[in-house]
Length: 294
Image (cartoon, rainbow, N blue to C red; front, side, top):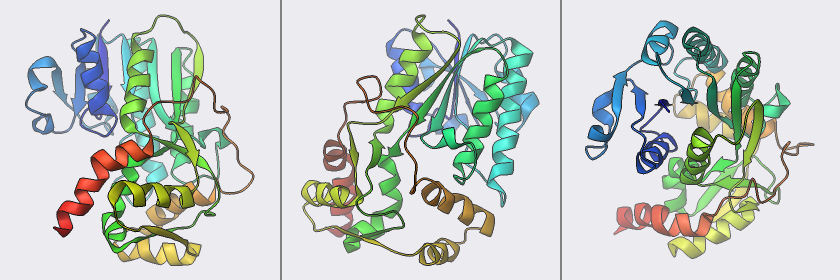
């Protein structure tokens, strides 16, 4: 089976690549800068330089491919949903032009709403487009990435996280490595066909209060959490240089899911993955916090 992987240096993609290599597959990896690949993986893959926003380039890079792991690249302009639409055009062109019959798409919890969830609406658009192609496609509806906490290292060192979600609202938290294992298994498995939706919910649903307690225990420093207003968060995001469009898209991922929302896939053995936040925080987050203060 000839498999292509997008975002092969990302939080999920790099683990998809190594899982496939361990399975005996030599994947084709698509990225803007092949030099960013880890030195030990470069001889195990076929790297193709490509911009995922350019449909013709993506189609050329995926010629001869049987299965594709697709991740919409991070929005880079002032209109995130327009960027997602461009990425969707690219994957549709690649699939239809090359007869790719199998796609695993990294989506998100909340994409089932289709509208009203900020940046997640862009993922919903990609889902809908892939559904219309009549191929075998699995949408991975992933929970909140543990690695998102790495964007808040300064706040963690200061001891307080600020969020706009209710502090006692449970939600799925997941390790990117676990998402990759599910993705690789789906790419390699012949046991499914048609349109599938696979929740990837991590080891447990957690509230922000529980997260703060887990991080406190894992890092050895007191970490609290407080809820702030939407406008206060909006001002923070604008303060770091985000455009108004990007600010609203980021906020929408929280505001669109905080009331009257439940994931389409309930937590079951199929959606639960093994890595706990406590284990990840001890191994990955603790060194980043303690090393900076030592």
